[in-house]
Image (cartoon, rainbow, N blue to C red):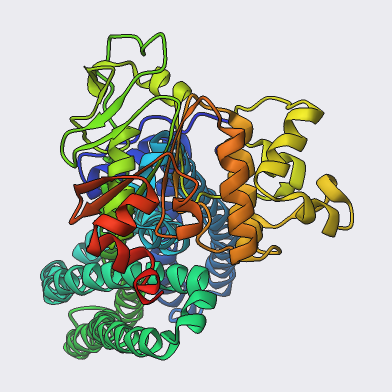
Length: 569
């Protein structure tokens, strides 16, 4: 199987079927071994009725006990060897499936790392979770066709050849009957692909909603919106359940036909063979052999149907993986260097300009609008923004990342001790003074003091063992410790109480003295400490000034940030 540190290779993302074939080609030796073992195992199953017929016709019927003993021993030897083949086939196919599983996990994780910060902007969290939880296993199961699937074809042809030697009529019935069974099941497999695709899509949406609920449940409770969201989630769950029933209905027909039709076919062929035996066209031993051959065929046909079922689901899952693997990080066509000195960042789409060395606050009734502006200014989305008059698209992306930091208030926090979480990736080892200054500026000293081992205290993934306000301050500490030339902070104090928020606003201004800082907020406590406030309406700049100026001159701004409290006074 693929090693944990081995390169998984370059997946074929031209389609679901091609991706599955790529997984097979990545392990050619094991795939061929699975096909050979599966074929040998099924062919030897068909040898059992042949040996039994010989024992009856050459030993039991004429009373030749030596011949009977010889054929019985051969039957025992073949059965024992076939049992060993079955074990080896199962082991080999398990390795085939596990290799496909691990390889898919590695390419998906590698793609997530490659997309980086663009991941959350290109696809939902529910899509990634659904791929990791369900689709990977489904794809691995589809590779069952490599072993038993190939073996079923070989066994079918072998049994047909054996039946020709017994009765051409019976051979013709088998050769025509088995494909007819597969044709009857085919439409259900096509329908299964459609229902399974819709089910997977709805499952991804619902999984994303679960993640949103888990992250915002405390806020929903505080706003009284828990019941509203719970009702919406209940409706979506019911729709998913109904779609699951539709998938189950189609699956039940596929599995019922996969077992029922071969059994019915066995009865028809046995009746024909019995008529031929009664008429003297075949011997009793050949009658037993025909029954055994057709009974053996029930297994291959069931495997065909099962492989068709697994492939139908596997292709659906592979298409989802391929769709994810086709996502591309933001293209970097930049060839120019970043400005050598602090310069103006300008977003022509909104009219927002960030002056160097100043703290600028963006206020808007829809927080998503201001967050989108910062996304463009940090070049996380297609942008016509400029820096010192130079389009951001023309500046090398690594230099933009080096100088401009977008600090999202929901940025991921990985598990580790608090020191590692704060340090993050790429910050090196900060000095004691730098760390203390960042903790002080973010008013996070009390977090360190309240933990049993201080900075060495373990922190869960996403810092779930901390409160929402503590997580937000830890993210701000991490951003301040990076000390970027331009800091773009999205709602950095939204989860803090008023006293802590006021301290953070004051200390943030002091810590960022002389450097460019932009924050999105509607909190008067933060806005009052900004050098410039930009008031946006529908994502466009509507007014500029200080917090106090806008309170006096702009009614819409006053209604947004002060709820007309200042007017009442």
